[in-house]
Every structure is written in structure tokens, then in C-alpha cells.
Length: 556
Image (cartoon, rainbow, N blue to C red; front, side):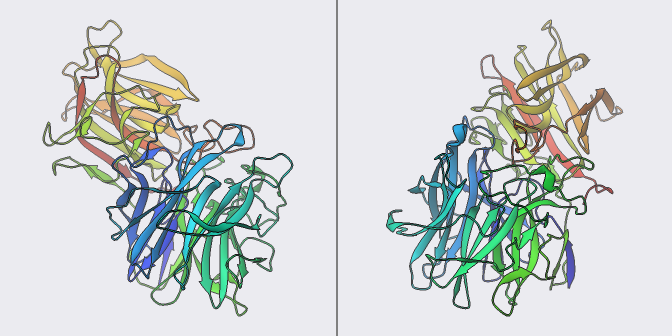
């Protein structure tokens, strides 16, 4: 027996959908404006998880121009035992303006979890957060949130269910509205159907994407309902068990529901799995705010809670409460690996699978390890403000204390060319330590620029000359404070460039939000990249990329 610490997957890994096939566990998460899209993780013990593939590759989806936090939402992973196929359904959120929330939902399938995955099959535009249920009789059912746009009607809408033909994507019959939530918290979404002891169980998320988030449950003897709520009238998992009435609220941060007595916040959006030994667990999203703040730079991460069925066949947490725990018991004796370190020297003619790119597809025409073997070559693209063609290779930030380091070779011939390393939330919010030309275009230097809520911040008085067009750059991140260091050769001592940078705004609550709401729900990334607004011909060669996480008293 082992106590493991939450989160089980650190950094941007929200909306987890978990299944078990034989002795293997698979888990899919949202990726929003990042590509490749839909992360799929694998585990054999529920404790240690590795990223093994992405589902949406090879231009299956176009995310250029995506506004934060739209993009790919809430993938649902399932396995049809009758056909032995893996299925993924997901929503492509394309517009959130005017609270219209225009999303298209699709299904893809594969015979192997690593693919190849099929071309997307269109399902519906009724709302978002779809899921599939494969019933014992061979029928398939699609459940989803029907997004409400009419004034004076329950917001954000109804959970609806319909039978679906997975060969054509068409409904068999019509949508059946089944619930607007099983508690008074409102803002229901993310429906998932399970079957146990003759009942159909509908697991939903509610309470909004902020501090009142939760997991709720209802049940019915018929898949199309009616569904009766859990008798407690409260969530079965949440970080904030205090009663809340918020019916009709389409979504909110609910900062008043922040719970100062727990290490994990925003627990909700859960997915149920049964182990080989008959135990039950729910994987769910959660967040960890910076100490003494309500800012969550790491986005929404994946946690695990142990569940049991009561004598009257209701699902509840194993300890009888509904408070999400920072530690969970699993029956196996396993060692939990929590480092998430990255050390890629690009000597294997490929780069780490964990590299992702905002908005655009990774393509050998702009990023490769073949043109300069032993290096990652990145050709300069749009500025970091671009939502279309930035050339960024990034990995999820997974801790509150870490350092990112690289060595870059770069020869700029125009003031609009640069290459370097930085911290990135989205196109409007980032910090970039870059090698570029001096203003007089006669020398090469290292300097730092930032974007905050779409505004550029130049640190023109802090720069250092780079005489041989190469430097090692290190950024230390410590609980929302970033410090940039450099050295021009291995024999040199690391030197600090400028002063410290307060980057707490690179967090879900620090970007693009209106009062009372969450500005984003993606998370902070670390990146290397290049910019060329001149002739798009320059490139930078990166000798290595490393991220080393340190565990301190404030970092679980």
C-alpha cells in the first residue's frame, strides 16, 4: 500500500479522461491553443504517468488565430470492447465572444492508443464537452452540454443525451435534456455516463472553472433518464465543500470559495476508472495557487481520489467526505517519480515528445534536428505576439521552483531577428530572453522583453554584448519571480542580467480576465524559439534544452 501525492500529472493536464484496458491505464487531457493537440498519458500503476502520444497530429486541426482559452476542450477517451477500438470525442471551441461559445465536436478512433487516429468525424455544434458511452447492447450514446444563448433561460444550459451512429456521426433520434446539475452550484458541464449494478450514472462537473468547481453525480435506470441527484445534494468531490447556491451563473471564478485549509484548489471535472483489483478512482483536475495568492501559474493539473460504492449504490469518496485530498492511497507498493525534469541534447535525431507549439503545427520546415545534427534548429517566424506562426518549442511548467537552460547559436543580420528562451502563457503574456542586434545594428546582444496583457515591455537599459553570437541562457523561476542569467563560455561564471521580473501574471487569473472570472485555464510553459520579421531565412541552433525542478517547502 502506498500514499501518493497529488497532482499525479503536474502542469497543464486538465479535464482528464481516464480508462483502463487490461492492465494499462490511459488518460487524455485538453490542450487548448497548443499543438500537437490532446495529450495522451499512460500508466500501469495509477501513480506514475508518461506522455506517450497526441491524438490530433498531421494537420487534423487548425488552431491558428485561437483566442485564450479557446481551442481543443475536454477530450473524452473510451474503449469499445465489442470492436476493440479506442474512441476520442472532443470539442474545438472556435469563438467565445458574446458568450456565443461556438464549438464543433468531433469523434476519432484508433485500433492502437498510439494511433494512427482516424480523420475527425463531425458530431454536433450544440455545445461542448462531449463524451461517448458504449452500452452492452452495442448502442452508442453521446452526451454533451447544450450551450444556452437565450436571455432568461438557465445558464449555461442542459446536459443532453442522444444515441449516435458512429459510422456517420448522425444522431439516432433527437437530443434528450436530462439535467442542469445535481446540486445548487450550477454551471454544469462535462457529462460522462457509467453503468453499475443496473443503474446508469451521470458524472458531471459544475460550479464554474474556478474555486467552486466540483464533481457531481446522478443516476437513472434508463440511459435517457430521468436522473435522480445524489441524496446529499452536494458534490461528491470538491476543494470547497461549503454550500453554494449559484444556479443560473454561466461561469465564474468564485474567488470567495477559495479554501485556505487545503493544498489543492478548483477540484472538479472527474472521470471514473475501476482497477484490476476492483477498486475505484476518479481522476480530476485541480490547481495549486502561489502561496498567499489566488494565482495559478501551473494551470489545471490532474489528481486522483479513491472512491467507494455505498450500500445503496451511490459513489462517494473512500473517507466519506467530499473534500479532495492532496494524498491518495493505492493498494500497490510503488515509488512515485515526481521530478518531471527534461534534459534533451538533441543527439538522437529527434526532440522530446513533450515539446508543444502554440497555434501552429510543428513541421521540419521550421524545426528539425537533421540540418545541424546534434542541435535543434529553429527558423525564425512571427513575433511572439502572433497567434498564427510563432516558432516556439515549449514544455509545460510543472513546479513553482525550477530553472530552464539552453545554449543558442544565432547570428542576427536585422533588428527584427532574435532567438532565445523564455516563459509563455499565450501570445499576449510572456517573457523572452533573446539574442538580437543592438539598436545601432552593429553588434549582437542579449536582452529581455515582455508582454503583459498584450502590451510590450522593453528592458532597454539591461543588455549585454554577445561577441561570438552564442551564449548559454538560464532562467530561474521561483514562486512567480524570474531571474535571467547568462554565460559566454563554460569557463565563465554565470552572470545575472538586469533585475528580477515579477511574472505572477503568467497564470490563469493573471491574463485577459474580467473581474470575478478566470482569464484563462491553460497554464505556464517554458520555451525556446526564434523570431524573424525580416526575410524569414534566419535560424537558431540550440545545443541542448534542460528544465530542472527543485522541490521546496512551497512546492508539493
